[in-house]
Figure 1 (cartoon, rainbow, N blue to C red):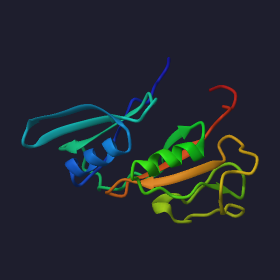
Figure 2 (figure 1 turned 90 degrees about the vertical axis):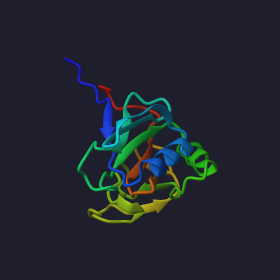
Figure 3 (figure 1 turned 180 degrees about the horizontal axis):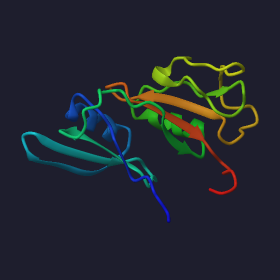
Figure 4 (figure 1 turned 45 degrees about the vertical axis):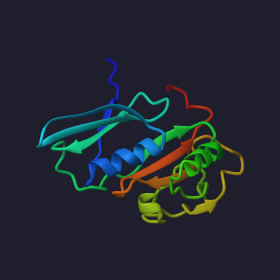
Length: 157
């Protein structure tokens, strides 16, 4: 049986501020409904994604900004970074991990929780290896996003 991740609930403090941010980032607005004073749902989909985000009022008790490591996969990390920056989104520089594969410590854009042999190095991975180049950004509440460059998928995907 297939199980597909379709929707992530994003905790935000100010629904209209979050809506403006995700519109600016180029996400597609799918829904904005407020059937009552206690409930509002705003649904966005990143360009080309099969998974969407939803935020609003009355959706979650999670703390605003508590979601970290939300990965968006791109085929060209530099182009994706330039597009977001061109839209006015505050994005990190392109970086890669000294270990060559999986970057840890992207939370808040800082180098945290590093494991031995993992260090953030400036620029894309020198070999442009899939899964090895990153850009980070956060929404106004601090929910943390990671762009990861993948040009060739590992088998089984």
